[in-house]
Length: 160
Image 1 (cartoon, rainbow, N blue to C red):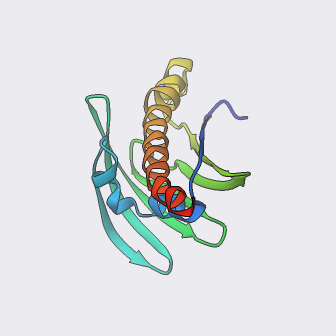
Image 2: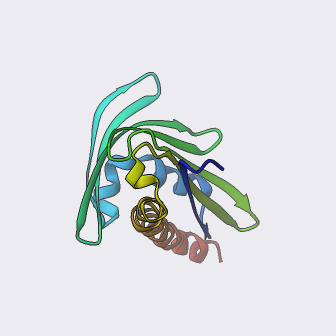
Image 3: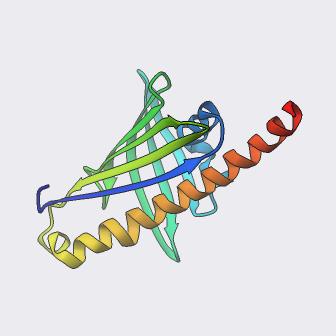
């Protein structure tokens, strides 16, 4: 891996229907309603299976904001982003959903080439990768898990 590349991988096992998890992951305009650390998501443009979205979240008390090109692939259950604005410009993000027995492994991979020398330092890489990206992605996955598994409870009870 290149010294200039910061790659973070966050994943979680969710015991819920893959389609409902995918829907929560893809419908980012709903994230501020369901994810307490998201401040807003605005769809700026939508065409040809792509959307330009402006997203804002909190890392603790620190506000962060970026613009991304989002592509969804419902067949492969993948959601990808290419950050086009903000401090993370150039970051690629991929959400993958893979069935594992009764559960779904949801993985978010972030890859960013660091262009500023200060950020390429060891501490800069930790700030970008661990302090911001890993923290926000981890909170997102934990909340998606909570919401998805709550949805599943009535279905399981009804089937018994």
